[in-house]
Amino acid sequence: MNNAPLEFDLVSLDVFGTLLDLQGAQDSFWHRLDASLSTEAVADIWAACDGIFFAEFEAGVRDTDGFRTTSAVFKASFEKLFREFDLHHDSAAAAGLYLDCLVSTPLYPDTRPFLELAGAKYPLCLSCDADNEMLARPRRLCSFKHVFTSEDLRTYKVYGNGIFFQKVVERSGVAASRIIHVGDTPIEMAGAKKAGLVTCWLNRTGKDWPYPNRPDYEVHSLLDVAKLVGVNDENDAVR
Image 1 (spheres, rainbow, N blue to C red):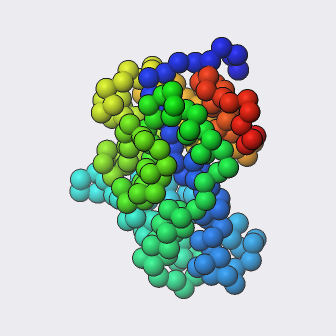
Image 2: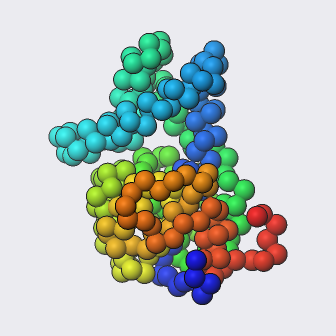
C-alpha cells in the first residue's frame, strides 16, 4: 500500500458487511426462525443460500420492467430454500424477519470512528443493494451527500456489470476516477472497476480473491481505509 494518502471527491460505502455486521444478522435470523437447527445444518443452508439468492437477483432482469425489489428477491429465495431443505416455514414471514435482522444488526466497532474521520474531510455516500426502507437507520449515521439504493437505481451491484456504479457517477456528478468505493464483496468490486471507480475491497475475514483482476486496494478494517485516504487518527482507540 502506498504510504502517500489518496485524495477523492466522493467516498462511496457499501452498508451490509461493510458498516453493519452482516454475519451477526444472519446468525440472528436463523436463531429466531428455527432454533432447533444445528450449527452444521445452518452452515449447509447458507452455503446453498448464496447461489439461490444470486439466481433470484438475476431473475429480476427477466421481470416485466427488468427489476425486482430486494424484499421480493428474499421471499422468492426463501421459498426455494425451504423447499430444497424441507423446512416448513412461511417464505414471506421469513423474508420479513431477515429484513428485520439486517436493519437492526449492530455496527462494526470501526464504523462510527471511520465515519467521523472520513466525514470531516470527504463527502460520503451509501451505495447499497437494498430497498429504501432498509437504509432508514444507516442513513442517520452520518450526513451522507447521497444515498444510492438498488430500488432507486433499478439495478443491483450484485450483477457485476457496472451499471449500478455508472448511475452513481451520473447522479453524483463526480468523475468516476475521483470516487473510491469501499465494499466487502468481490462482485461489487468488479462492477465498480468496470465503471471506472477506484476500488477498495474490505476483506475483514481474510478471504481469497476469486477473480483474475484484483481491486485497486485491499484492506482489513475501515480504519485501514481511513489511513488510505489520509484521515486516520493515531489516537483512535479502535484498532
